Length: 288
Ligand SMILES: NC(=O)C1=CN([C@@H]2O[C@H](COP(=O)(O)OP(=O)(O)OC[C@H]3O[C@@H](n4cnc5c(N)ncnc54)[C@H](OP(=O)(O)O)[C@@H]3O)[C@@H](O)[C@H]2O)C=CC1
Ligand SMILES: CC(C)(CO)C(=O)C(=O)O
Image (cartoon, rainbow, N blue to C red; front, top):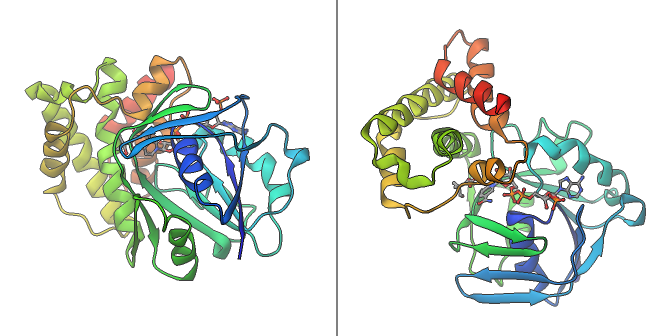
């Protein structure tokens, strides 16, 4: 049976996912974009994927599909919602491919049972509209259950790893731990190799410890050892790697500071757990 898929947002993640899904003849893929382009070209670790997918620029031209995939930045969730009126039918499922821990809260208008929150670990950079470099094959992680399984099946023809977890909350907070420490790159305008500086590494560790404390209070199963794990992960990774929040700053766009750092301070306040470093990162990134 043909599945119809609409992807809202054709940046680093949306274009990568779009290129892989378009490669499957059994899927009818529509890209819902803000900035037009003629061809989609993604350099993947397995080779270049090129296609001319169906592109829509206005929500008014859209019709209901089986799957809607949101791949905008978190701060563009409002713009993404403008497409949903047209794209959502009675049986549509919505997959939210964004960072942070508030995937469902960003789309309050959608019945939570139809929403699949997805943790994306696919480093990718966009070089021009419709052109992206996918740095690593990467993975997508969904909550266990029928919707997560159905979403994973869309990627069966791709090398992208899909996994289902009974404890998605913990997985999302573990990813947030990586992302919150990544703010040092956006603040210093330096790629991941900045971790080689001992004082920066100590700061990253302390930011992760705040994340661990708040995540635990929110119900995630995290231990303090995660701080060393995250810093070691940055040390082992490519020093020239540019995370998406640094890419935003370099491009002069807004950043996801609230979803990646501010959220730790915001949720921390509910539990009387201070998170001054993440608060500072959020404030400085929003002010810069
Ligand atoms: N890049 C990465 O390596 C990773 C990113 N993530 C997360 O994935 C999410 C997406 O990030 P990323 O792909 O990097 O972001 P990008 O900025 O590269 O892409 C976002 C896309 O959304 C589009 N967009 C914004 N508003 C609308 C709208 N109203 N209608 C249609 N399209 C719209 C933008 O359009 P325009 O082209 O006009 O700017 C852009 O193409 C983020 O939450 C990020 O943190 C997670 C893991 C890795
Ligand atoms: C962890 C990383 C760097 C890639 O998956 C990311 O989430 C981002 O760039 O936002």
